[in-house]
Length: 179
Image 1 (cartoon, helix red, strand yellow):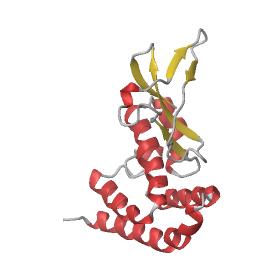
Image 2 (cartoon, one colour; image 1 turned 135 degrees about the horizontal axis):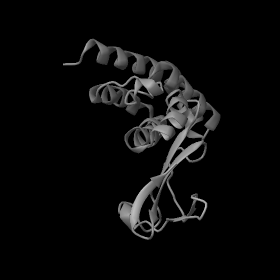
Image 3 (cartoon, helix red, strand yellow; image 1 turned 180 degrees about the vertical axis):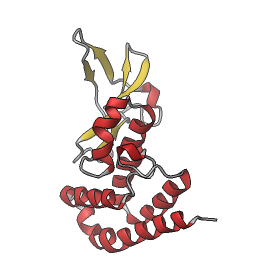
Image 4 (tube, one colour; image 1 turned 135 degrees about the vertical axis):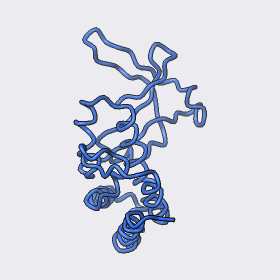
């Protein structure tokens, strides 16, 4: 029941993974971050990072089935699937869904193109699957800026990211994310 557009996205993703990612898995598994950045940029050129992002920010603004078709094809690429997911799903999507217009304009075009690498910092020791038990806190400063204090672990793309979505508690109870 896939549309022609879905089949084209599947083919593009399959060719990218088969020809450009799988032959280099050994390098990716040894934390070759420059290669990971290059492959993310290539995914951006092919449009597969922006399936869920609005066109105004460089995305394709496709339906959820398109995102699933791409993710299904990416899944066979071992650790690169995590790199892709950290970029497309854990960094781009929160900004698409919850970012301000100025945040979207500032970050999305460069994340969707792969120019910037995104990461996601949620987990902490002692609060793994219970995100609301996080201890990282955010304190608003008199000048309007924020100071975040705490520790995060298992940060997808954390070793080479430019933009990180970080979760923290404001006033000890209100859970939110910061870019």
